[in-house]
Amino acid sequence: MIRTLVVTKDRQLIEHTPVQDIDREQARWIWVDFCKPSEEEVELLDSYFHFHPLAIEDCLIHMQRPKMDHYEDIHFFVMHAMNDKALRPVEVDMFVGPGFVVTFHWKPLPEIDEAWSKMLRKPQFEDHGPLYAAYLVMDELVDHYFPAVEAIEDQLLEFEAEEDDVEIQGKLSEVFDIRNKLLKLRKTVLPMRDLLYRVINTQRIDGMGHYLMFFTDIHDHLLKLSEMVDSNRDMTSDMRDHYMSLSANRMNTIMKTLTVITTIFMPLTFIAGVYGMNFHNMPELNWNAGYFGVLLIMLALGVSMYLWFKKKGWFD
Image (cartoon, rainbow, N blue to C red):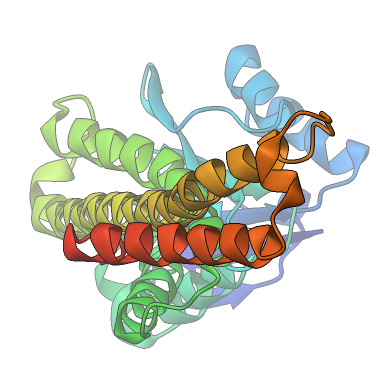
């Protein structure tokens, strides 16, 4: 599907004109949005716009890294939108040239729709041009990163507020799940931050000086996002270390208890083993009170060892 927005030289706005019917001579600038294009519509990138074959190839090959390429006076951008649920990046390609901006994406994106709606407001299309449309697209893409990052931040705050539970393994699993989400976000945010850094420092885009503050604002948002992601990763590292220490401490306590119990029973087992050998010449076997005497000795030995261990603090 292709939708078009044409701003004429007398500052009139015309929507949904077929690409082939647009009079480029009478247009001040145009915005063409390719959403889930058919093969015939993809052909327009070459037959109508005459974009560079390498740029067209990048549009057709999914999940390119965010970048900016210059083909004479046409500037090609690869950007990433964010899928809020799966946290998977969705590629958005954009061409900006003299008198036009072209966006290309394989999935319907609310970010593009919102940028399109903002551009339809009268002051925007009257006072601005393709670079402002490009700014709106980038700004909406980046603004939609915030809900995903903030959702993870809220999850971490709730996680911290919970009291330590006995099921440490479950908490560790949750922490690693959050770290995995943050890694996905980081792989999207950092390349976009690098892209915006290149955009605000380039000297090859005509008219960029007028819109420099707009793109700098997007770069500031990405700096904030990258700091949020890194601080959350640091927090999850602390939480991971905390729960691993708790798990190790609990295991040590269990092993210490089992060791103490085993140590107490060792002399008792030894005594029982000695009198279980069934030799005829063992004088104690003929004692009438021998059985009860041995039991009493074993009880006294076990209690004394228990009290000794407790005094040494082995049960603390």
